[in-house]
Image 1 (cartoon, rainbow, N blue to C red):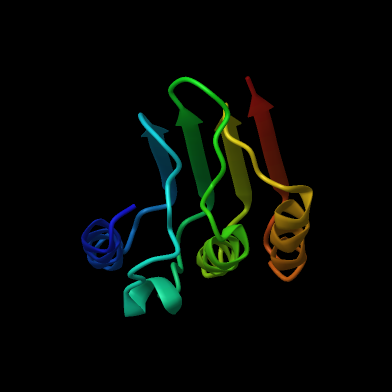
Image 2: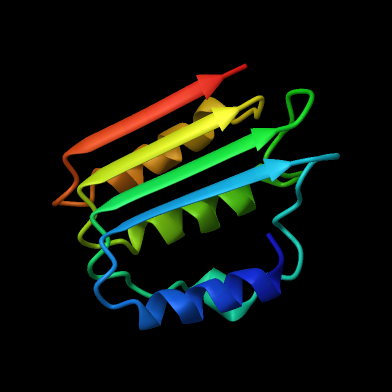
Length: 128
């Protein structure tokens, strides 16, 4: 995800004040994505999303299993911070297709989930 894309997404999400359900699909065509370079300020400190109740994030690699970045820890910390900023979140759905994520990163996400008082349902799928 490029810095420009993420910044424009954050600006759009701030304007959609009544949005309750958001789903994001991303397909990796070639290589391994690298989220650790060129973070914008909004990626380091994402805004709070006050109304989103259902968040679905679906990521896939086109051919082979791939990792989520060379420095998975940095990228996952930012990703977990992004998810935790959805303060009204009730349902989280995550699907990884041919994408690898270490169990330590899942545990990091779970630590953030336990702080979200309105969260009722977590659904993860790991598909090949």
